[in-house]
Image 1 (cartoon, rainbow, N blue to C red):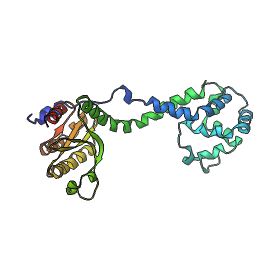
Image 2: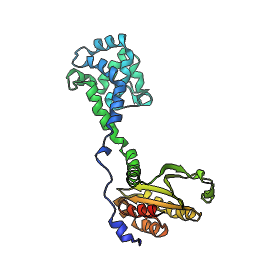
Image 3: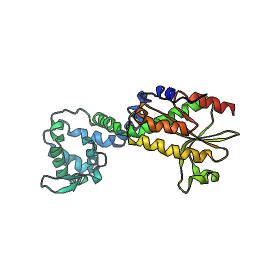
Image 4: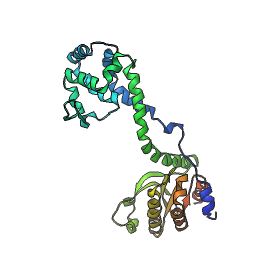
Length: 274
């Protein structure tokens, strides 16, 4: 099929995020399960007027229960978190969990004491589930990097294309043209005639990174394609490319095999002919 950059640009999608992108509830549930017993112990504090007395009672039975208090203020790595105490000294957050008195200082200083006593929270397990859901949104950036890989993998599987993921250039001595730096490719497809080394990505927003990606692949592709039996393939999509259109066009015209999620069918047809 004849390449047409205008058509390629018109096919770019606004997003590749499905509903399961937003929250990883399996991970959220696992995080909550790790602290659930301690949280159930601390539920005893809810609605108590004399928090100091109740904290002391729990401390005598299970002082380790208080080690989960950090998550109640949405701090997961409380061990290394520096804070300023009431005396103006910088201390580690975990130091507040070293005695019953310090635990009470923590509850009062953070405002949790008032929240507990007023019963704004009914159950700490449910409360932490909500916190973990909020914290999980910070992981969306990492998930978005894998969505495109998963999408392409599904397309390959649906069409019966055999592939390997996360393949390193060191596996192929012939690729000495790439120099000493080891390169990781998202996919590798081997046919009787050729090995296709594939990079995939999706950009819903612009930025300087897009220009750098296009430039690096423009330099990488000719090196790989110069080696008999190898070809570089770039599968990319996303309207973010509109902000880096010129650089993308340069790459599109330099790299023989550039596809998006619409034109990838042409690549599938090519593979089936091999």
